[in-house]
Length: 423
Image: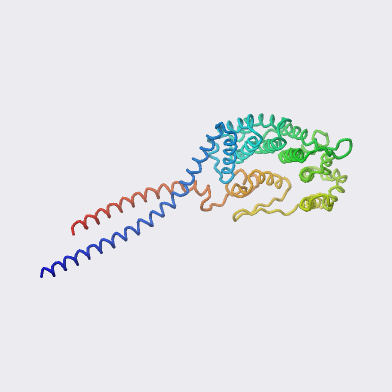
């Protein structure tokens, strides 16, 4: 009998433990599923906080004594702002960013000045049409102008400053007078590649040629902001660059200068034709040069350069001779951007140079760029910044629900533990 009693008690104990274990397993299963759901809900917010904390650390690093350290911070901030569209964060801290960029441009090394100039462009792309963009432009324009005009600075830095000045003025919607003044300043730089004594200037080094090409490219970007009727009038009155002088750059020995000059000529043709039907007559004298460049087979030029040049000038020649715009489409996500004019193509190429692969992210989320290229409202997709903003209240509600579920689970476990103690 005692043995039987012991066996009965053991059975009761085992049954109770089995019941408790089953309940525990059920609770554990619920807990793991709901914890995963809470983690998914908070993941984006957590990553965003981490992202902003890292950016703040990098911004603090712009004041360190090490020149290499400051340069690394500039490059990493640029990389972060290219990879993610965070206009509110940048807008709240644009004074701090401006101050750091300005000090690096004034006292930094060549690499530091180049990195600071690039960051200035990216900051303005982030701000877009926000008032902070104009403030950044006004604050940085003097130091950028000074650096671009400094003959003692490297040609690479001067070219970066020209590109940044052009983009800042373009994004900040500057006054026409300021834009024309800046365009004339740019011309003083790329005029170094004009003919000298009626022949091609062969004294231009590759570094100087890249500087001239950057200044000419910035000049072309600002041209897209001027009313076509004003462009025609300025060409007639010689208050703007003459087509003849610009055509001299087509004979440069440097590929970048030739190709940039071709793009700007196509842009001038497009803008001029919008106002005057007979504007194309001014291009008759340069068609032979364009045809030559479109079929160039000189062996003293690199095969890659020849291929790139021919492809570019074939499009330009087709546009000027037959008024046919090359069909260029940019696919990003489930959307497609059609570049159906040289103005749009110029603006897109400039932004691509600044943003690199990040251009697709900004085309999807950056409202200013979408408005610039006349793209419809952004598609709301999981993981995008606009999706995150629109679901903040929903996440907060889920957070409260998860807290309530956690409390209920805690009470249930307490009851289960109390039942175990009874046996």
